Length: 328
Image (cartoon, rainbow, N blue to C red):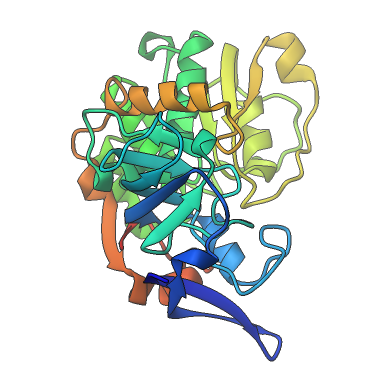
């Protein structure tokens, strides 16, 4: 049996401990495609899995990692051939299926996307699930008629994985971007990505309880939910659109119907996990072309498998900015 290195999270005395261990390829789950992983990336969901969150991962020991980019080593599906560069994000990878924080994964062929030309394996993982979610959010705004000439756009949770890539993508497309962050020392970082303005979480959160505020934003990419999302809805201009993909502030949404029926705004949900594979492949091609940020590398900090356990704690504590790419 061929062995390989992987992060393994185990339950020990009521605590969940992650470390690098040797695993056997024969112990991987069934699937048509065996992939030699070259890069992965760190997402909030990975840290939840590593902490024993049963809403993410039911059974342990387990290898987290909802993202993987690598080279096909074997495929029983003729759609993929040995040596082909591929991407796997979402579905059950890293949740209840052995994930991308390992030298090998084995998955159903229906989860696998051919890496598009225009980005490298490393760049694909700098984007990862977070950047891919950003692309889907930006795409939804564009399809709902939000264009740079309509007015400025707001990005909440702007220093996070989804938010930071959204800021860069929107700035590339010519939008005037306002970023929201609770990290005052990261204003220069956001401006280096293209943000024109940076405001605090307090300034982005209305406490007046008024059902409507002055329309300021043509569009919003929200990554946090809660009262910040409710405030963004009240602050969106006539005919504008708001995307939502996260709940780090709260899953609750306390608002009224007034912004929807008096300004005709749209609230658009974004899911990057269970998309049909053909839609996912098309979206990845967009990431590699018109939504590709030429300087995406400056968003990333590269780490190794050995460094991952410490970064699980950092991301849970809100101490990570930009994207963490993992060299396997």
